[in-house]
Length: 164
Image 1 (cartoon, rainbow, N blue to C red):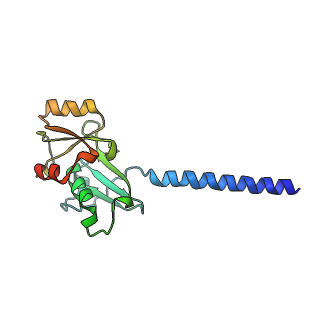
Image 2: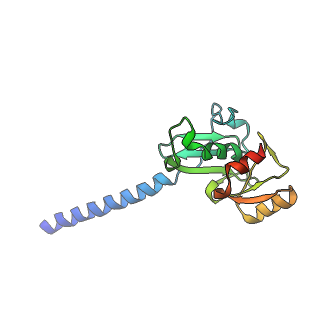
Image 3: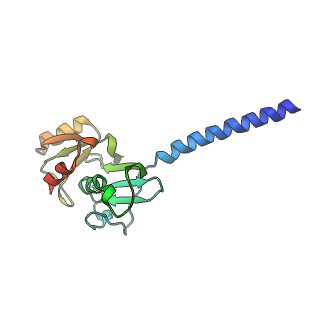
């Protein structure tokens, strides 16, 4: 009888550990969220829902979301997060999504490629063009006179300033 109680205790501990580990993994892999009609870009104040092909978003670990009318404004916010009024920092971010130019589906921004200097205009004029694959990025450069293909970490304030 004692061995059954010990076995049950052991199973309970193992099950608890598994739930804790998987729960943490689920909490950090938040999927994209659709903006409502009331969501405004915190950078320019535009209503984001009006530009569904350009939407970008930052999801924070507390489940709050900031929506943007394009990757350019999302980077303006992201690159100045420490100076924003939100009191948040990069460690507070659970996920970042941008809309792929060709598929018009949300993709993880940190895995995306961005074409700068193309003749494609977004809601705020010249825009960073988010793409899921290198082949698509090369096509935008070729078909839309793009100047550079950048990875997420290569997008700087200087890159953004040249788009304005």
